[in-house]
Length: 57
Figure 1 (cartoon, one colour):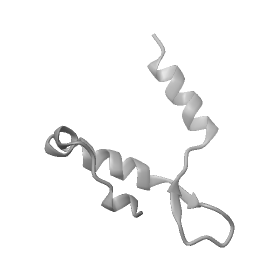
Figure 2: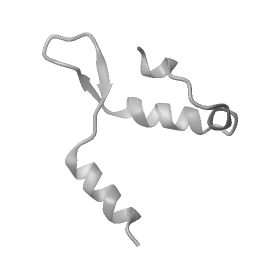
Figure 3: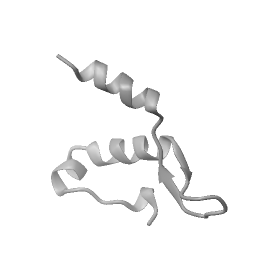
């Protein structure tokens, strides 16, 4: 499966959110395993912690 070919619910595709989500998923990828031809979305722990604190009330 290619990230660029992913489809989201109609509402997300209609309002443009689908394209934004695909872009974010494709922004950082890594190989599924050493020698793999499959790229998967990747996120560092730093990104996750930063997002948590930004969303926290």
